[in-house]
Image (tube, rainbow, N blue to C red; front, side, top):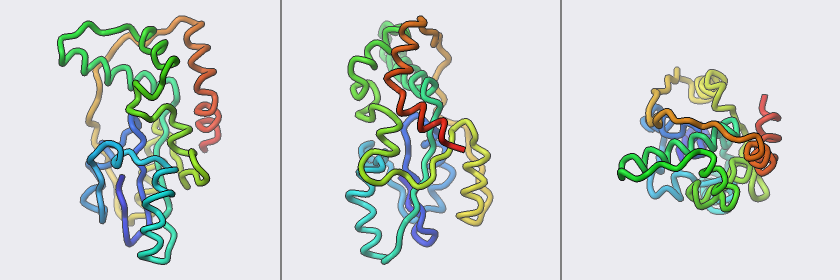
Amino acid sequence: MLIFWDQRLVFLATPKAGSTAVEVALEPLASLAVQRPPEMKHADAAGFHRHIHPWLTEMTSDHFTTVALMREPLDWVRSWYRFHLRDAQDQDADAERFEDFVQAYLGDSKTLTQGIGTQAAFLTGGDIPVDRIFRYEDMPAFTNFLDEWLDCEISLPRINVPPAADVSLSPGTEASLRQALAADFALYASLV
């Protein structure tokens, strides 16, 4: 999470949606950068509005606009798989197939996504959703927004890239995953 005090802007770091690159590029401009522990770095909309925004509002008597990125839902799960695959390779463990990973995700999504579950829950949970959500796949729109809001040119590095992997699914498993992520797909489709 990055807080830009003077600009009244807060970047909420959606896991597996480019948050590390954004933080590397923007931390020098931020008034406050929360990078540890992961529970605070990846504060969701509900937690931010319940705990942090009231404090900011009390100190400034002003509203802080929230902004975040959202990744295409299937690609988001693929990214989590590659993240777990990298960890398995680091530990010389046998890597599970993507099909098995998705079945495990369908059984208990929060176990495999550091408690996040779904992007829709992260971005819209609670009473107040994130103010501005941009598609991860349309990074120019996001950086143009930041260029204007922060009054400087933003260039994001390409870092924290997980290894390539076979991320094919059987039609039945993909259909089940699409059903489980229905709220994510609806939110993603609404982003212009």
